[in-house]
Image 1 (cartoon, one colour):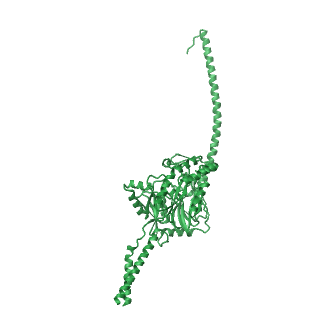
Image 2 (cartoon, rainbow over the protein chains, first blue to last red):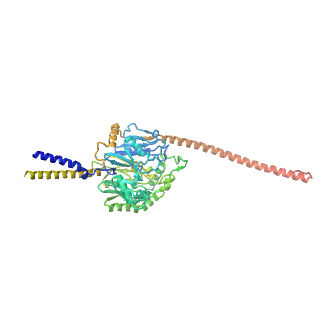
Image 3 (cartoon, one colour):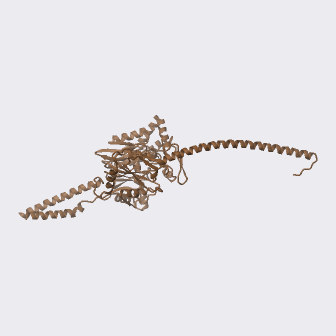
Length: 410
Length: 135
C-alpha cells in the first residue's frame, strides 16, 4: 500500500516537474556573442589585393593570424583569390571567396552581428548595409560555415555595438538614425535592439557621436569593468615624445606615408572611376593630432562618467585621436578618412583562458604610446599580446576589432 | 496515522520538487548569461570548427600570405619609372631641338626683315628715278 502510494506520488511529481518546467525555467532566447568571454576559437578577417584596393592589408593579415593563438581558426574573406599565395602549412586559415566582381573592405566587424540561439549561431544583418559589397560577407560565411543569416529591419554597424557580460552598448547615432527611420522613440528602438540581441541595451552618449564607432573608444571587460579611451593622456604622452624625440615622430609620420599604398614609391593611384587617390601628408601632423585629442578628451570623460554612474568600474586607456570632422567628406570622395592614424588601444580582442585575462592589442609605431598602452592593460590584470602594423588601417579609421570579428568562443 | 504519514511524504516530495525546479531555474539563468559556454549537441558552428581543426596540421605555426599582385604592381611601378625616365630624356632632347628651332625661326625672321628692308629701299630708289611701280 505504502509502496503504491509513493509510486503514485512519484509519478505525480514527475508529471508536475515536466509540465511546470516552462513556468519556472525560462528558455534562453537569442543572445549576442559577448566581447567578454572564454577563449576565441573562430574569427573572420578579410584580405584585399593591391590590384583591387588602395588599402592593401596582406602584411596586416599575417600579423593578425600569427598574433592570435595557434589554435584560433581564421576565415579569410577574399575577392581576388588568384592574387594571394600562402605558405603551405596554412591549415589555420580557410579562404572564403566572394565574387571577383565585388568590392569588399577590410572591416568584417560591421556588416553583421553574431547571435547564439539554442546552441546555434546566427548572423544578424542590418536592414540595409551599403558600404561597398560588404553585405556579401555574412552570406558567404554562412555558405561555408552552415550558419543561418537573418536580416533584421534595424539599421546598424557592428563597430558601433560592443557587448559586455550582460549588457550591449550601442552608440547614440545608431539609435537616433533608427528612431528617425521608424518614426519612434529612442527607448522603443532600444527595446527592439534588446529583443534582437537578447541583451539589455545601454545607449552611449546622448548627442551626435564625435567618433563614428564606439568600439574605437570602449571595451567591455569582465567583473563589471569597462575600459574607456583617454585622449588627454594619449595627447600628453605624444606631446612629451614630440618635444623630446622629434626625429622619432618624424620617422613614424614618414613611415605612415610610405606604407599607405603598401609600396613606398607609389604616391597616387587611380580608382575605378578614374579619380586620383593621393597619398596623404602625415609628416608634421602629430602636433595637430595632439590638439585634436585634447579637444575630444571632455567627450570621452563624459562617456566614462556615464558608465561609472551606471555602476561600472571604469578604467582609462591612452589614445591619440586625430580630427574626426573630415570623415564624411573623405568618405564621399573615396579618400582615407584620416591623414593621421586613429591610435586606439580599445579596439582590441579579449579572452579569458584558465583565469588568465588576455588582450590582443594593436600597435602603431610610436613606441612611447604603444608601451604606455601595454603597461596600462597589464596594470589592469591583462596579459598583453601585442600585434604590430596597424598604422595604415588606422589611417582609414580602424584597428584590430574592426579587422577581426569573433564568430565563436570556446 | 497512515493518512498522516502519506500527507507528510507528499509534502516532503513537493518540497523536494520545488527545490529541484528552483535549482534548475537558477542554473538555467547563469547559462544564458554566457552564451556558447558549453558545447551543445546541435551547435552547427562548433561542429564546423571541429572539422576545420581536423584539417589543421599540428605544425601549422607561421602563416604567410603574399599579395602577388603587389609584386606585379612593383614591377609595373618599376616599368613606369623607367618609361618616365625615357620620356624625360626624350622631353629634354625635344626641348633642345625646340630651342634650336626657335633660334632658327628667330634668325629666319631677322633675315626676312632684312630682305623686306632691302626691297623697300630698292622700291624707294626706283621711284626716285621716275620708275613707276605697281603695288
